[in-house]
Image (tube, rainbow, N blue to C red):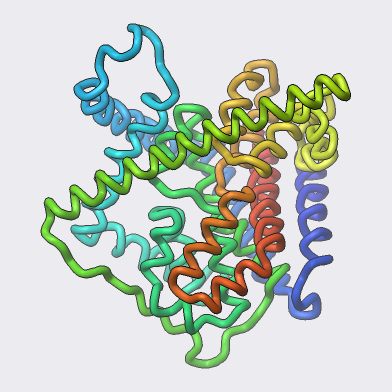
Length: 393
């Protein structure tokens, strides 16, 4: 039965992506099948082998340890503000981003992350058949996040063809930064978060090969990664602290606005239709959830969470999901959790377009033109990842 839902989920994605494809005749079927095969192998390895489970458990404990370390700084600065035993979201999930940002800054500074990204990207390019730039970007955006990742190829962006630009933007929206992973693990099971990060790298490239297929010309695939001017170590630490804090403030502000807006919409819908907005959009997304492998009895609830992520952001959806996940099956929890771990929402389209425009106005204008197709592609990538996850549960 799981394999049946794998087929229905993948066919759903392929059918929608095929309809909006830029070049249906040149869709890269071989690349797509190879990447789907790699995803199936990876998800089975991570979820059904002792080594894979051990790796995922270790990663989860590693981030738990980092969050505990981050908590020492939080308690020193804010200790006593909340009552003992309480755990406000901003303290548990957001403020640790400051420490994680510093840690990533240090790993970048000592050249550990650039080394990993470069060679993992090289291996990925051999597997996927994609260009080295696309593979480098898919890996680096899963570590650095955006908009920071665009700065590493700042001189490449104005020279990129529109087709390559679409691919890297899809990767940027489908991945999540390592700084955010710790926050997600406070709301979702760590094993699903880790699995999603890996699956999303391939899912974005699969979608790109359907919606935006192309072959590179000879000598077109040149990768020149830009390095920012090296600053003193403690200046880098200070800048990383401020970048992390800005991220905390940005996410907190978005949550304040979006959650209040969702409540307003729900109040209006309950008053007029006696039906919450989330339930309504849940009915719209229910068939998609069902085709991904979610039991029909839970499809409306799951669909509501999936749609909430699309129209608001993943944090709002994860918080709502936490309120209902205890009453859902393990399979639904796994599929929805993996689906939620990405930046595929309306707000991120603006961030990506703005980031590109700050580097090249011409390229930024082009990204704005294909914004809806970019959002569709990133959402379909999340559907692939969730569907793949469902096959092993």
